[in-house]
Length: 148
Image 1 (cartoon, rainbow, N blue to C red):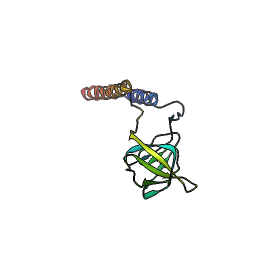
Image 2 (image 1 turned 90 degrees about the vertical axis):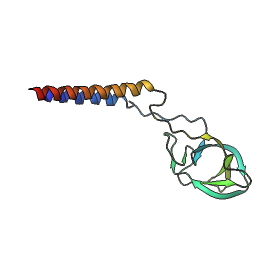
Image 3 (image 1 turned 60 degrees about the horizontal axis):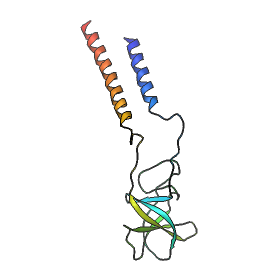
Image 4 (image 1 turned 180 degrees about the vertical axis):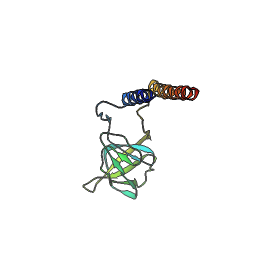
């Protein structure tokens, strides 16, 4: 009985470790961006003379990982976002830079937070099958123990 539990724990740990990366992996960004209100805005090289009102700020910065919320791969936490006079935020917003200037960022589309399982349905199936196998072994052991 004890050896069966040890076998289950070993199988579970092997399955679990097979889903974790062996080395740290960095995300590769095609461009600098900020995320605001669920949309990604690509940083341009255009500066804005007139901003309207503050609409948000960077809540999380990383050039290595992807996060939810008002995330940026280029600007540190606390960097402020502004609406631009005469331009809808559906089109562009302004980002305050450290020197007091405002750079324009164009809306690219909805921001999608990817998971490690994106595009990998095989991994999900293997994971589910592994869990089901472990549950079957546990149930079989319980039935055997009850019949003794």
